[in-house]
Image 1 (cartoon, one colour):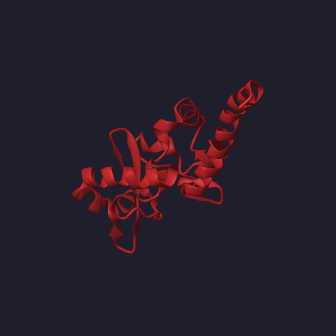
Image 2 (cartoon, rainbow, N blue to C red):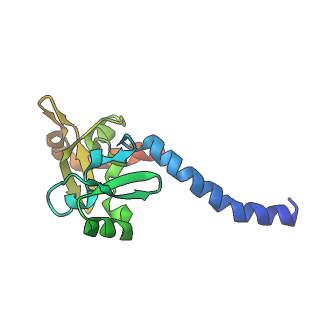
Length: 152
């Protein structure tokens, strides 16, 4: 490869890779009408109670839009989005660990494990958080592997 082409490739490659990242995230994350976590504030989970976000206070992070209950939470998120984004793109942690499936969640059924937010399906008398708690370590390990198959 001529030197000029190599330089152009090296300069443009990070831009191309970054440009693809938001689209890939949008494809695999649990978003509805362009919004993650059903409009809930991701920072509020770490304060002990999930709160619905205000559509007027939103932050886009790598193609995913989050709503926030207040400006302070939006600011906290902007400083460290990886800390607050839910595991597995916001899909049910139990289903991701058990079968590698993307299953909807009840945004008010959650658990924080080792500083990471996990969300769960909780409809029609089936609360998968209870199942997760029975074998959390195994389900987390397999969920991590299964999610990596989506985002690699």
